[in-house]
Image 1 (cartoon, rainbow, N blue to C red):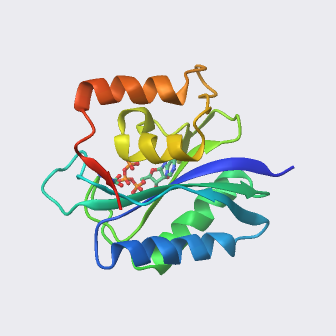
Image 2: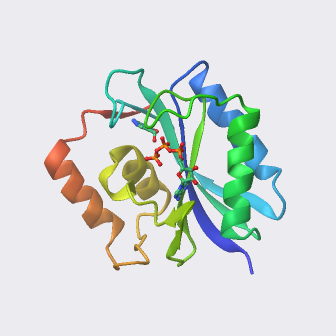
Length: 164
Ligand SMILES: Nc1ncnc2c1ncn2[C@@H]1O[C@H](COP(=O)(O)OP(=O)(O)OP(=O)(O)O)[C@@H](O)[C@H]1O
Ligand SMILES: Nc1nc2c(c(=O)[nH]1)N=C(CO)CN2
């Protein structure tokens, strides 16, 4: 059975929009995998480490027959093939591919936590995710995406994120 999976894409080095396009192409080449929906692209201020270039972010919904750890491995291979080198935490990167949600699964492997532990705090994830699926419910605590987004917007405002 294929699972519905949400992936967050981000780039803040080189040709950012093109990097995302290349990554999307490589994702469609993965075994038993297709892209169902893609959000708009968003220009976002850097989160976490603020002294770096703005990011382009996007969320895609895929259907995949891959198991979670196989998908993680394939995504990491794409990152490496695209030339991602420095693994500095929250630092600049050509491409970053995060598994946000994997069907209704709650996963706690050492190398893979799903839902992605920081996604609820990140407008650069929540805004495009809501665009792709406005009715989404978090599988771990039943929270609604709209409510999570409203509470982060109330804290931070939405000046830091702009559709491109
Ligand atoms: N849901 C997930 N999606 C992708 N990687 C994950 C996930 N959960 C845990 N990881 C682990 O996180 C590790 C670090 O990932 P990465 O280098 O992309 O971190 P980062 O982008 O600097 O920070 P962040 O994880 O906060 O976005 C990966 O090697 C991977 O094993
Ligand atoms: N706006 C934005 N900020 C970030 C991003 C990102 O994709 N977008 N990724 C990071 C590394 O995890 C750290 N900070």
